[in-house]
Image 1 (tube, rainbow, N blue to C red):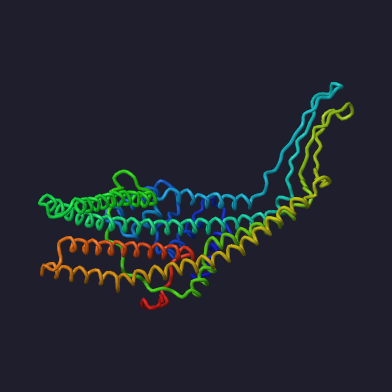
Image 2 (cartoon, helix red, strand yellow):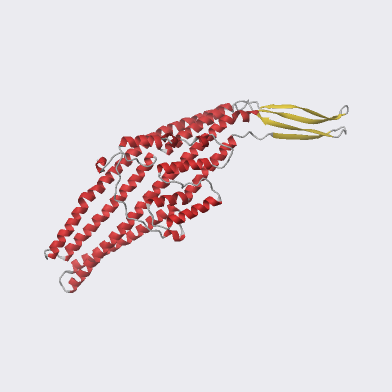
Length: 463
């Protein structure tokens, strides 16, 4: 299957069938998720009771183990209620495609008359069918196919946005939990310093000002720890909502800490080409323009006067004929005198020009978004690498040297604790830098329309 498929649904979807079930359209969305997110079998082809039962079983299996980002993505694709509601757009579009291929129902009419001269009842029946509705079926189907294609790529874009949101929420929750552990270490160091200062103050070895300064440092550390605990709760709930979980399932745990292995980056030019080719919201804008073009064609064809043909049967009554049934063809023709349709066509043409301008504007924004997100990714990567190469080793070295001087009684306990606190702060800032990198990468993947291919090797590619 080549990359061209990623812009339009398969032929089976576009050319439709008699079924109103969007099985093929849902299969197309599943293919998008598999190719662009890397997840298979997360978009059920049907919405019957058996499918829902299998989804519940699969979610329970996934939640039975600690969460990885891959498990979280699978749970979200299967269990997120907003995505499941969005998938129903495929059913609407599929039904409209089936509807577009049907003739209008024939019209039956009748009348009943009573002779004023006492000859009895008479009347008739007429059956008519619009010829114009049959003539417009090809144009209607083209419009409905375009709308179904638009629905597929729109739903596909919703899956990519959900994947981005899950990845971002996942790394933020991971970083919040790791930062909480570091804040605990910082608070413990502040408690040790405060207890030591209190004992020295009681012994008369430090001034009241010094004792109060250490107490204030402990206050700040405890407030920061409380903020970190709140941040963990909020971050976990953000992810829990995206996963569609409640009840006992909210007590999930992470399988591993924040990943520090950064993948290689891709050249900007390649990313822009990928975005222009693969962005599903850009494809949706193209299908929107195409739909309006088909609507314009349909309206122009609809300017042909409405023509209904049929057959009429009447029971004639009179003094010379008594009762007699007569049978013959019927014909009715619309006279487009007051509304020839020019205003409606002008309105659709204006909509078409709007859609074309918006498509061009979106293409400009796509390229700009890719440039911005890649710049953010490169900057975040450099920050992570600087912490790994320089900041963390230096903080560790300072702590070791301070400990050596402490053992030699060249520095005091307070200086050792302060050095340890500084090392904890450096480690926390490194975790935040890692979090920002994975957030930036998730945003870039959404900006280019899918997973970023690795075309370069080594971290030097980011410079």
